[in-house]
Picture (cartoon, helix red, strand yellow):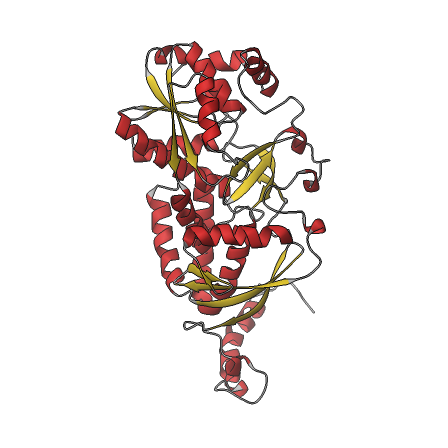
Length: 414
C-alpha cells in the first residue's frame, strides 16, 4: 500500500505528538488523506500536557484527534511482565514493546467505533515496533490494513532522516520541539523510557550522557540507603510501605521511590533486533526494576527446582515473544498460563534496600507458600534433615560416575 491508494480515505494514525507524527500527518494530509490521530495516555513522563498533543496534531492537518486512557491497561500488562520476569537480554524490561500492544488494541477499538479500517503508524523499517503494530493488528483485527509511511517509497524519497523532517515542519510552521541538534530520541510511557539514535549510536557515548526523565543517575543518587517494604498477594503488589495501592498506583509509586535512588536508570544494552541488526539503547525503568526485583526475591522462596527450571524457560519465551511482536499469539498465552500458576504462590512481604542504583534483599515475612526452612537449611544439629542420609544418595549417584570413567568418557585424567 502507498499514499496514492489512500487519497480521499480516512485512516487512524498512532500519534505520539513528536516529529514523526507531525511530519507524517502533514505529509498525508498534503496527499489528500483524512487523518484521525489517536494518542494513548500512558502517563508519559516527557509529556506534561497531553491535550497539547491534540493541538499539535490538528495544526499538522489532522481532521480529528482522540486521546485514549490506556494507563490501567498498561499497568496490568506491566505486572504481567514482572510476574514473568520478562526482561530482554541485558535487563531491558520490555517497557516500550509491551506498550505497543496496548496502544494497538486501544486504537483498534477506537477504529471499530468510527468504522475506520486502515491503521497507520510512524515506526521505521529498521525497528521492532513496526512488527509489533503489524502483528497485533493482524491478530486482533485481520480485516484492518496497515500503512506505514516509512515503508512507502514516496515518503522515503522525500525524507532521508530527521534533518529533512525538521526542515519540512519548519517550512510549514508546524509546532514541533525537535531540532537538528537533538542528541538522541526518547520513547516514553509510565513503565519506562527508551533512549536511542543520535549520539547514542556511537559506542563512545556513555550511558551517563542521557538526561534521565524518571530519576537520576546512580552516581548522583542520594548517599543514604532507603528500605522499602512491598506486599504481594497472588503475584500482585497490594501495598508499598504499608500504604494500600492498586496496580496502577503501584507502578507510579515505585517509579517515585526508585528513580531518586538511580534504580533502573541508564541501563545500557546493545541488543539484537528482530529484523536482524544490532542497535544500542539506554533504558530507564525504576518502578519495573524495583517491583521486579522484589518479586524475584519472593519467587526464590516458593518455587522448587523443577518448577524454577520450567519458570525460567517460560520467562525467556514470554520475553522474546513481547520483543519480537507475538504478544497476542497462542504461544504467549500458553506461557502466561504457566506463569499465572507461579504468580498464585507469590504472596508475602519483602523488604528491599535501595542504594545508588541497586536493589538488595533486606528481609521477607508472611510468605505462606515458602519452601524455605531455617531448620532444614541449617548446618547445626537441628531439623529433620540427617546428614548421614546423604550416604545412600551419593552411592547411587556414584554408580553412573564410575561407569563414565571406566568407559573413558571422562576427559580429565590423573
